[in-house]
Amino acid sequence: MADAQMTMQQLELVKEGKIFDILEGSLDPRLEASGVLARDGLFYVIFDNLPHIACIGPELSRAAGDNHMIIQDRGHRRGFEDIAYDSRSGRFFVLIESLRRGRAKFMAAVQEYDVSFCYVGSSWLDFPLDRPNKGLEGLTCVYREGQTYLLGLCEGNRCKAGAAGRVPGGGRMHVFRRGRRNWDRVGKIRLPETVLFEDYSGIAVTGDRIAVISQASSALWLGYLAPDGWQFTGPGTSYALPTAAAGNVVYGTAEGVSWIGMDQVVVVSDKVKPEQDPRCRAKDQSIHIFRIPPVPAPEPGNRLDCAMPAECLPGGGARSGYRASGAGLLRAARLPRDQGRG
Image (cartoon, rainbow, N blue to C red; front, top):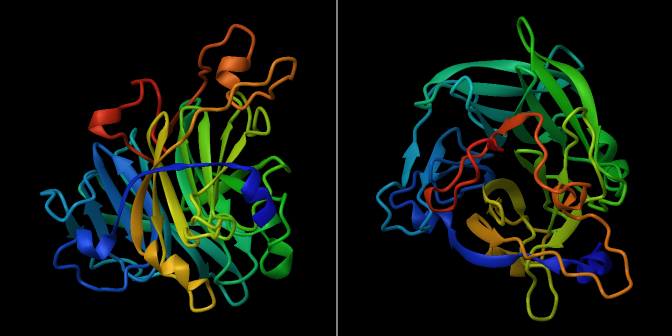
């Protein structure tokens, strides 16, 4: 993946900060950030090692008055991987990667909160997983044909754990619809085989535009969902997270992503692992805002593949067909009203 990353355009850093430095009086100096949601001008960050939810202002500054920790004293206490929001019901969903269900089965689950972040309950995402620590890593909410769906992103390629899950070209996400007691699996979405990521750690949707981030590959993929099916319309575009001057990976723990504008995303980073390059410590346990660079113009005489299908399709313009939610929009950079959050 290192060679492939050298050929990708890089995202452009706008601003960033250590979450502990931003949250004055934080409950714990170890902040294993694992998911982020941008909504109504604020960033909501969840952690793998804590049940509480951080609220951070877009300035990413300790001086911002909106910064605080939302204390949670009910439900599970750890293992959280992503956060999504359904604007139709006013409910937040926090993903638990994998829990034991029965003697020999593991499944992901979601904890549900109301619009004030009061705990409502939890439900299974009805899809069997290989093992407890390799499950669903990303979550977003889409609204289509009068129904709310949750999209759960598998961490490993082909939803496999171990070495098999690190073979690129098999990104998968599963589609869930609320059933009588749990969220029933009703479909599967395959990422294009050209997405050569070693793993997948976060997902966000707005309108028909989707972002998928990889921790191991330190990269972001952008694509478009078809308006009338659970598939993508083309190969999409991959971007590398910024590297050090010598090309070394420094964003090696990117875990969650959310849209904040048509050309900006917010990303959070987990705590660096002992076996990782120590240079990644400078960016771990942090929140970052990146700008997506424009797609380069094609050279004369060369055909450019559609990296932005909405503009490339006959007739141009943005497609519609469903709404999406899961990441709100900054007040200073709102998307059109008919686009969802993810």
